[in-house]
Length: 131
Image (cartoon, rainbow, N blue to C red; front, side, top):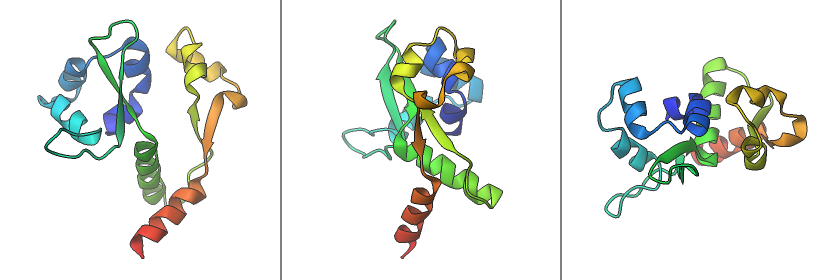
């Protein structure tokens, strides 16, 4: 989950296949873990923390990315570790990402190219779960 969250530019723009992810982190059964973190299998329901999309250039490749629930989890963990609310949380809109030529061009995106997440909504949701 952490690798998928941190390495979105390599996965999304370069179409890094699961076998490369597997060798990068030294875990041989990454597809099984990705399956459990996403929708799961017919026998076992997944956690829904990762979404899987086909690479538009090579439909044989499946590319993982954090789902909204995955982003919320990673944000909540970061906030707890830092002992403060997260700064402005944002995720580039899919159409803004598709318009980029290179991963480094993300820095050129404007404020309107992002969807924003309210960190207070994450804290309220955590409080509701603990009650």
